[in-house]
Image (cartoon, rainbow, N blue to C red; front, side, top):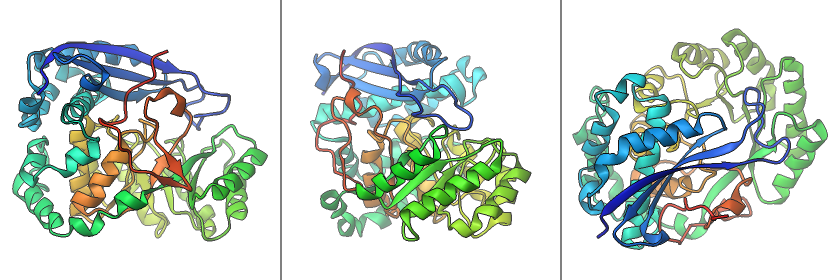
Length: 413
């Protein structure tokens, strides 16, 4: 047992090397984490919950302020008691009678909720002395559903339907346990940052193949689309026909541009086109999906909540769901969105605002407990040195983490 006695927030910032993290929209990123700490009556890092959400610089401090405004009512709660009906807790926090106005369920306040929620899960796993994936796999279907706020999903996913899916998947979960031994495949998202030269892109793609990756991603969205076409061809020629190649526009294109460039790139056999236009424009993604079929669309990096994901799924406007527990309201909403994807037969490939630290646990849960396909998980190595227990990727595969908690703790400088 561990009782929350105090809550604090920390603005954590790390500068990147030149060129790293740059895409068509975010030209000067600083990888930052609005971090929640849940202090308990059992002192020590192994008894302090650490929750993170990613930003790329300015505004990180605003989320930290919102964390302290939202989280006060958790003080005095025992973590086991808190998590026994956590869906109701998160719904109450999300629907704060005043702060909800500046969302709702998006922006600074929702990111603060994500940081708080992630800290709760981290503390829960630490209090039981197990890795997060192990904790999640030990839960019954009823306990999992109790973690979730399914409000506004009742038209497509009821509590009883969620329970039925979890119970059905549990019957075959033992067949998927070998992933714990073999590891979860990764893909390299750092071969083609936007400002890398053509030569860097070519060399990085070849390096990634040499390191065991069978999939990689290139940033696109240039003012001159011919640059994007040229660079995609560079990657395809460098890695051959058997490697999966994805592109990420980071919302830069208008719909007409997206249609034109995607059709021009069709011979490159892309595995997906990611964030091709504005993330709030579900109708544009629906139109694009129809126009460029069979090329697939991936999105979710900037989708803030389960309701918007529901709309994308209903519109058949996305094929790969990139839900991120550091963008939606933490791990609880991540699981709710994953259940939606499971119901509609879609694949979940998270965006890793956490650098893969938490999501390496969550994809194991999704595969084993929910029966979702094992695809791969994004890998970004730039902040490894700053985590106490960095994700280990060998020969293109995430090795199963064995340290307790959610792998979110930072090295203290």
